[in-house]
Length: 151
Image 1 (cartoon, rainbow, N blue to C red):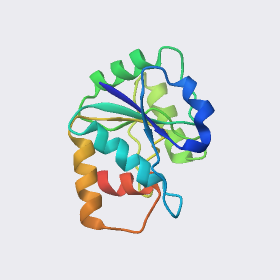
Image 2: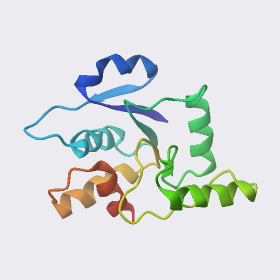
Image 3: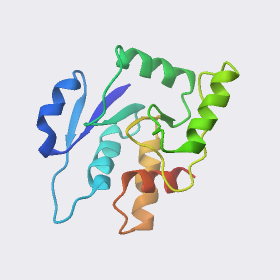
Image 4: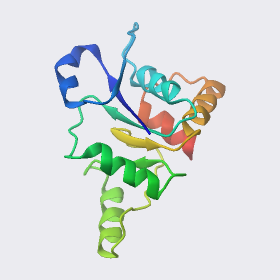
């Protein structure tokens, strides 16, 4: 299992939170583009299973072990390890799953896939990149592109 951090050079001080992660830095460009760096992370994963975390995320204690256990439980699924409280549909799905004693909730994603901390199954990264290459959109939002690709 690979652990990567999606990093923007303006936030170098945050990298101390990510021991044991491969840092994938935004190469820069004329316009800001979260997708530019996220796609580099997916490319770095290649055909391996891995976790991509944004550099402004806060990790729980024992993150590597817990993320690995989650990935082993659901090896063929994209797992969002962070879901914003602003996404009420996701919060409701998580509350229902928790009340039922479930460890995971199925969350529908029509317009965005929260990619703050995401587990990618082996091979899925390449599929997303191939889809994005075929689409050739001007979209720059990493969460919108990944949502459309995995639908």
